[in-house]
Image (cartoon, rainbow, N blue to C red; front, side, top):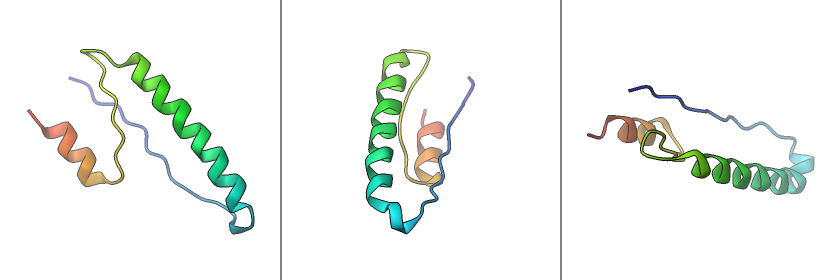
Length: 61
């Protein structure tokens, strides 16, 4: 079994917060659609908000 993951960090300018949220929403939607499309019995896509959630997913039987 191989585990690959993408970690995303946030950094933004408070003056452009409105534009930031709109741009991030589009990126998140595109990413979700991409990985959902390539998911099958060998590739599983999931989104987590922290390391503990990631650990729970990769260690479940």
